[in-house]
Image (cartoon, rainbow, N blue to C red; front, side, top):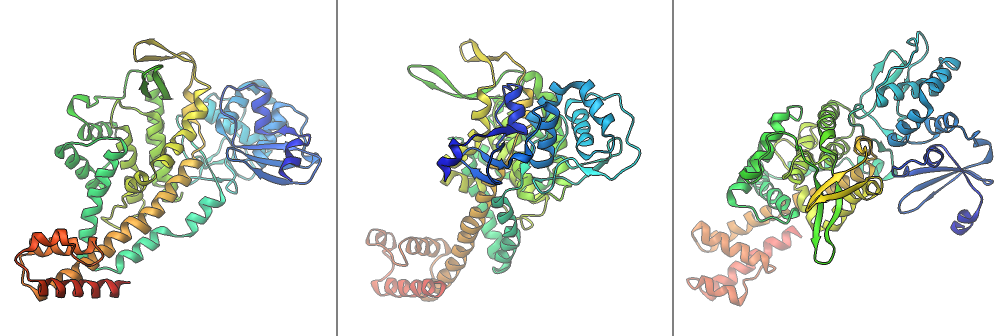
Length: 502
């Protein structure tokens, strides 16, 4: 059946039609609509979602009618929408609104023009009529609405014109939200004693710190590791709307020689040096002249996400990945990006009070999936960036690229983060709590057999637990003070504890 779909005649409509008609040098929209002779259906590929509509959905091929189709039927790609509105122009858009002054689609187009483009049309404010949503909640995850009385449109965008990602409403995200992972984590924490939970949390902070550095391929000094751990522990006091707070955070987690004093003022990129071809560029960051407005947008976006009913994990994904895509500093961007995940999960009440989920450990276990998620953003935009090396390791961008970073689809990043959060709750968090419960029971059992010093008893228990409850012959040499009979009793006691846990 799939091969039949591929061979049938189809007419692009909506955003993919706008993309083709305008020959836009930006990534294609993920959702692509076509009119066909057959029935309504959906076909998903690894990269795109193709929506097929019967012939009566066809448009007249004009920019306005294809924009109307997109507003009515599709999740919006704001890169395409903003480019289409620029191409339609003030005169044609003004004429459309005057022809349909109370029309939902004309008013939304007017709202998007003035919001995304930033220019005001020669139109009087709408005096009457129902308010309509800027983004269709059936197709997008949205922020708490703010009424735009001029257009009688509810502004439920996630951000502002300076930075406004979108997240499509997908079955995967709906299912993850319905799983109520936050409630699952709270129930898990409540099952253990406060003392056990506190010890687990201490370990998880250290695990998150070391994993975050390991993702960057770094083995930090004890001092740098401790500074990052302290930042994580004080996450609730962080203020993302304070530029200086971000700069202080960056300075606290990098080598002091690379501490920033403001946003970067040079062109940054992510690459690797190869022997035959020199520098291979994976990702080009926004131009330095765009960083100030983009970071103003990031701060406004994050503030809005913090007071929004938007799901906390999706909010964390949008803010944290937007930050790392902007790369406002020379160093430390990745660690701040992962710090922000914890900040928003904590601030939005998803994490139990004082608890951290070591998301970086889950990222590190399957690093290739993290890279794939970053590339879901970086790869498509690379073809739209004109650049060259002006001197060794100095790169220059030659075209306007701001909207590539300003408006993007954060759905892949939201789905990825939700999977990692689920894994870290159900694996890392649970495993550490379970281990401590077994460890405490085994430790007590050992001390009842031999009144050993705490450090010796702790080492013995850990070595036995690492070996299925028994002390290996090689490790036996470390406990020459114990008799064989005492070792046998200790192993039997630990095995009973393990059987009870199973």
